[in-house]
Structures are given as C-alpha cells and as structure tokens.
Image 1 (cartoon, one colour):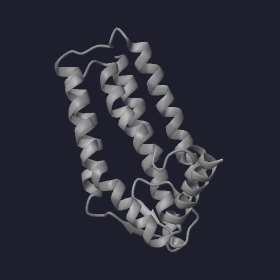
Image 2 (tube, rainbow, N blue to C red):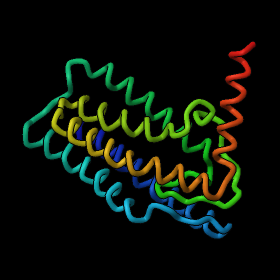
Image 3 (cartoon, helix red, strand yellow):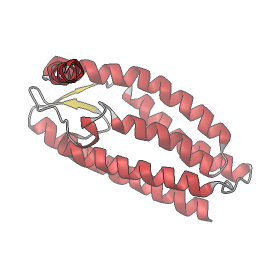
Image 4 (cartoon, rainbow, N blue to C red):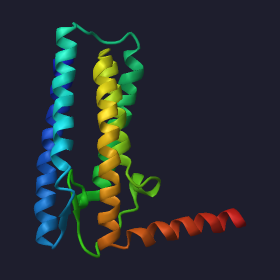
Length: 186
C-alpha cells in the first residue's frame, strides 16, 4: 500500500510538471522560441513512462518491499526533490521537458545553474536509481539507469548545440572559466 501511495505521488508530480512544461512551451513560443530535438523527444517520454511501468511490475510481481535501509534512500529522494524544485524554479518560464530556446534569450546562471550546466538531468539520474532501490527493484534501477545514460548522451549535446546556436551560451560559460582561471593565478 505504501508503495502505491508513493508512486502515485511521483506520477502526480510528473503530470503537474508536464502541465507546467506545456504552459512554458506556449509562453516561450509566443515570444519566438524555437524547438529542437523533436526526433529524440518521444524516446525520452517512452523511457520515463516505461520506468513507472517497470517499477510497478517489478514491485508487484516479485512482491518487493521497502529496503531495510529505506531511511537513507528516502533522504536521498527528498534531497533530489529539493533539487528538482530549485532547478525548475530557477529556470522559471524557460524550464521545459523539451528543448525550446528563445533566440538571444538570457542564460540562466542562478540557483543550481551557478554550479552545473544541467542539474535537472543529475536529479533525474539520481531518482531513477533511488526510487527503485527504495523498494528493492534492482532490475528497474539497472535497466533505466542505462537507458537514461543513453538518452542523455543524445539529449545533452542536442541541448548544448541549440543553446549555442541561438544564445550567448558559449560565451557565458567561457567568462566563468576565465574567471576561475584568473582566481587560480592569484
């Protein structure tokens, strides 16, 4: 019963995020934003949808239960949720599940984006491991960690190319690198 409540919460959260993403997509496209990566997006949707199917089937069919170390995984889950909310709110209307770039748009470098370029992808990777391990669904954790790595090996370069083609993305991070090098020289 606990598993189904937990998984329903996560699925509800994802549905809410999709609604926010759709609203942000409309808003950005009205401002002239352009969508990239349409060819790989259905694979992202499939992997994330099948993750839930796999998790539910593995836990149900193999009668999996909470791991004895559940408190560790639950803390990691809540840290990931904090990171997710921090990343999404930092991007504001620029956040989306698709690659949608506003030409000459500002590069967001606040919140977790001050520290890493793609924090939400790290958070998703953590969740794809932590949530199954919380319920001892080892097959789901392994399979979807691998599938996510494959998808991100396509997604991140596509997003980087899109941002570099329409914004000052490269320059924004070049300035940061030169400032770090200047500090090291001192």
